[in-house]
Length: 477
Ligand SMILES: Cc1cc2nc3c(=O)[nH]c(=O)nc-3n(C[C@H](O)[C@H](O)[C@H](O)COP(=O)(O)OP(=O)(O)OC[C@H]3O[C@@H](n4cnc5c(N)ncnc54)[C@H](O)[C@@H]3O)c2cc1C
Ligand SMILES: NC(=O)c1ccc[n+]([C@@H]2O[C@H](COP(=O)([O-])OP(=O)(O)OC[C@H]3O[C@@H](n4cnc5c(N)ncnc54)[C@H](O)[C@@H]3O)[C@@H](O)[C@H]2O)c1
Image (tube, rainbow, N blue to C red; front, top):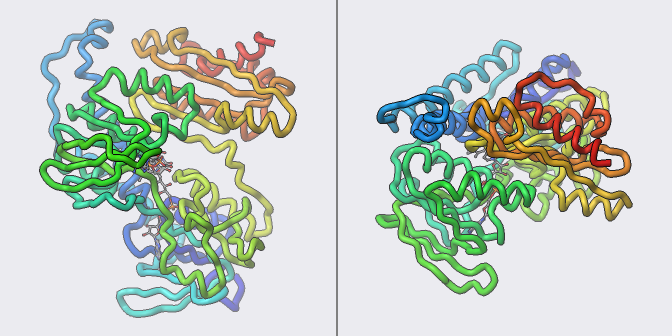
């Protein structure tokens, strides 16, 4: 370590991004401190991935065990299936404290100094921290800003945390409204609509854009509507903006036409989950002390090496990772960015390959993807002069899916027609979140369908759905 500094590395924010960076820094021999103002583990562990997946696991079982038709086809009969809302909520809360404890201990065990308090940059290579014991200043050769994000609540929407709330409160599952409006059909909207309908609530999804799940490949979004929305107690309002939401009993929601801005409908519901995206937590970080200007949407500008950009140029020894950079608001992306930042500060050049980072919505069944959507690939093909081809294979032709009686779903592989290079893969169906990893690894290595079609997959497994898509791509040409 350089004698001139207190630490080799100080990380601001102990979310999944900061944690991933800290572990990698220690394994690279760096003396490291991490500063956390609130809960160790940040959004993912306390209010995000972990509790939401616990709720989805429990509610998913309820859905499955109440599906008498499906069970009958497997030869199973069950009586009444009940559940205890509070016990499901406790399952999520207990998991949060276990994983928060494990994460904190992993840092302590490795000798990372954990400092509790609010950190601000205090000039180059200097951080001041407001702790319970007073202001503390530390110096570091390198600094990573990993402050994460918070829910975005559009103007006109009033929260009370009880009847109108964001995911921060929804994960507590304090009560089960009979009728809940979900504003936004992104990941959070979809996952909570899955939880609520499984536990017996009626849901109305309001989406401002002109299709549901606008972030997903259009084919997959269309199929998701057939599988995840149409057969359930879900109504949809698409192309309508939730202009005002007033808490109370009932919650009153004014829906406006996106184009004319006229109020076209008023909903009166028991509760409203606001799932309209997240914004970076970049206020009061002392960014001005080193001259960082946030981008138009408030994110910290970075390059693919995760260096902070000041006037378009990389600032020495200053890095940023995670949701605050606005690249991909996913836990594993934050952690991957942290590892890349540490590699670069140790003079081992590396950059983040966003095209190979997969994503999944943990609905029942799951939706996952990696790389480009078909429209994005076609756009790139036009710019770079290649044709795009698509291959699909269906869960209904897969022996394992048939054995499970879970045959809804498709895998879609998007590739370059000339070289066969896989550009994107999209899956909806049983265990899609696990299945996508194979395609992610293939994209990371820029592999071609003609090569992937020769890999041997275990029979009978769901992994054969992707295998079949690769084989169909090869026989199509
Ligand atoms: C409901 C929900 C479900 C999700 N599910 C998934 C999922 O299944 N899979 C997935 O990949 N992603 C999921 N995400 C997204 C994931 O949670 C985020 O991408 C991830 O948490 C980002 O990590 P981060 O380290 O950038 O920031 P965060 O986790 O937000 O952590 C930042 C930390 O920095 C601290 N901090 C901020 N400013 C300061 C300061 N000045 N001084 C000290 N500390 C500070 C904050 O208190 C916070 O603890 C979900 C998100 C939500 C809301
Ligand atoms: N499984 C996962 O990986 C997972 C799960 C949950 C959250 N997350 C992360 O958290 C982030 C936030 O999730 P999210 O679902 O809130 O955001 P999102 O950006 O995925 O979706 C928000 C949706 O709300 C719509 N919207 C915005 N304002 C509206 C209004 N006034 N009326 C109607 N519709 C409106 C938008 O058009 C958009 O479709 C995501 O970026 C995601 O990366 C990931």
